[in-house]
Every structure is written in C-alpha cells, then in structure tokens.
Length: 208
Image (cartoon, rainbow, N blue to C red; front, side, top):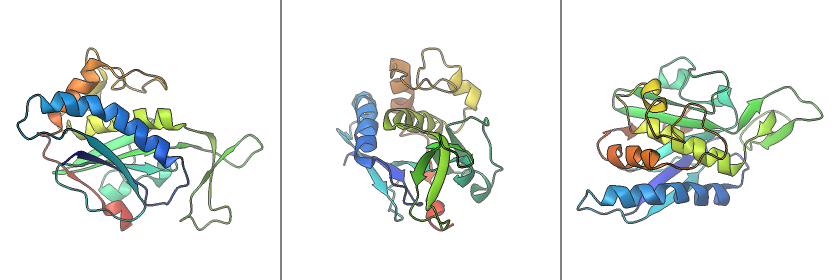
C-alpha cells in the first residue's frame, strides 16, 4: 500500500488542492524511495489526499492540517498546548504522548484593506465566508511548509532547534525559503524516522 499523506481541511478552504497534492507527492517520492531501501515491506509510491470530512487515517499515514491563518490552528488550545511557535511561523507541530498534530497556515491575517488577499473558507460563519490576509501563500511554498512540519512530525524526541540546526537540511531549516530545494538530509530524516516515530495522527480537529 502506498504512503498516504493527508492534507486535512476541516474548514473547507477553497484552494488549488490538486496542485498542492501533486507538489507534496513530488517531495515525498524520493523519501519513499529512500525509505524502501531499508525495508522488506515496500511502499513504492505515495498519495497525497485532501479532505474536509474526517478521514480514516492509517497507523502508518502522515497528516497535516491546512488552516487559513495561525489563530485557526489546532496545535494550540485544542491539542492541549498554548499557541506556540514564532509569530511569523508558517506552521506548528505538537506532540502529546503518542499523538501528534501538524498544521500549516495559508497566510497572515490582517484587517480588510484594498491590498489584502482573500482566503475563501466555506465553513466560516462571517458574512464574507473567509479571511483577509497580507498574502496568501502559493502552493509551492505551502508544500514546503507541509514537508517541514512532517519532519517535526516524525521526530518526536527532537526539539525544534535540533531539526533546524541539522547540518545539510534545507526545507528543514527554521523559516525555510519559499524556493528552498529539497536536500539529501531533508530526505534522509523523513525516510529514516517515518516508520519509527510511533505516532498517531490527531484527527480531532474535525470534532472541534
């Protein structure tokens, strides 16, 4: 069975999901190839899937919430920890026991203005059915943010600084560049730890 990477969308955000899924799959293919070298049970391929209904996430799947802006995240109060990370952080991963919650944000929220960008969120109850942001991140950058959070996802014993300071990481650096290339170390970390992390991906965001 291929590796499944769930891009969880409980807010029903309108976004270029097919493009984002393809980009995430592109980043994960070399990870699967590297991982399969050390395992008899081969994954062979990867599928990125987006859902706005609660999916059945398998024991060996990976998952990351995609939410409009930081204060809509689940890694904070809903997962038992105050909202963390840098103010300008593009995502957050929180481990609690054997459960893990990863999330990324599509933009930085601001008041409505003539230069604001709009993120359409079908499950919001405000009249606009969405939020205004300084900039809505493009799928190529969001895919890198997802990959970065998945690196944190599979390394529960590591502090943020441990990952960010690893020699050779690129997407794994703190605040990865929008066009950061995927390095061999980025691939190695995810491929080495994805089967040993022992995490359960938290899907409680759909119940909040």
